[in-house]
Image (cartoon, rainbow over all chains, first blue to last red):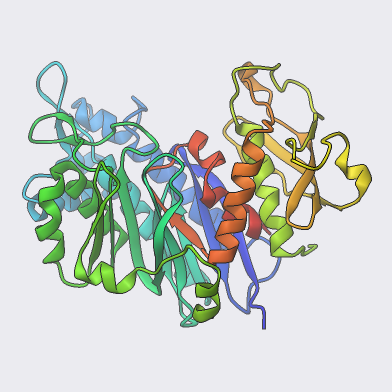
Length: 268
Length: 145
């Protein structure tokens, strides 16, 4: 029996964001709640965009606003940033050394995952089937049917295809790397672009935190492996510059090959 | 809404991708429609393959940062044999041109995703430009309602 499925894409936070829904109650028409979900993502983008001088986060950084004068979400994110900084031993830090001295306030490394996880919760409240939301390769998902979403992990090497597939029924998957945007992650300890790994993929219960973990691990480099391996309920995959991979034991158990068609038959 | 088989719709994605594929030659895609032929195949001519038969599929209009893109494909089996832009962005004179070179690459991607039963892709941050050529884009297109 074919379960109805649909996908919708919008451009938010400078990237395409796609929502996939799967369930017997799905109709061919666009669900009304999607407009609300995308509108809220746009609103968050307006609040937190460091590219917009008139965003609240920019005005906060410029000293034109206090946290108390900002939207409550600003305070919530700054609190989460502090937790992230503590959890990662400073590898994730919303205060980045500025090129000309001083610091830049840039919580965007956390905002995307947090905003998308928030959107996912809202989708889950409005839709009774399976769903996932993918924002630039970072995914929050849930399957209530028990049929896993199969999430491919991109090989960061040019033209590399997929490293494997993760059958997941809840939580998030995030990948940090230089594959698409160049060196956009900065090691907060040095202020220089990270570069010792091609990518880090982390999956776990919360997209907000797997995104932070992947970002921090990418900034820290290969030495982050033991740290990631010691986290309960998480699985991680690191790709070295030569294309070789290191997987935590949880990841080695979880990941499935994607190369041949018969594995699809086994899965179904 | 008309439902078309996954194998056909999966390839619809490629057209959006191709429209966004920047090239260093040719003219900018200023005024649709633009007719495009499939890339040279070892045993087939490329001109007007649609005349040889196939299924015509009209993709959903997709809003991109550069404007709306909508394509019409002629599909034979699992291969795109002809493509035509019904709507294409023409802002700031970008050199978007359907590139024959990209057809086999993206066709392969979409087919691979289907055969591996991949529902989504996690990768390093995808920009708007990168998305157009991404496997996630092909998957999104395959399920667009």
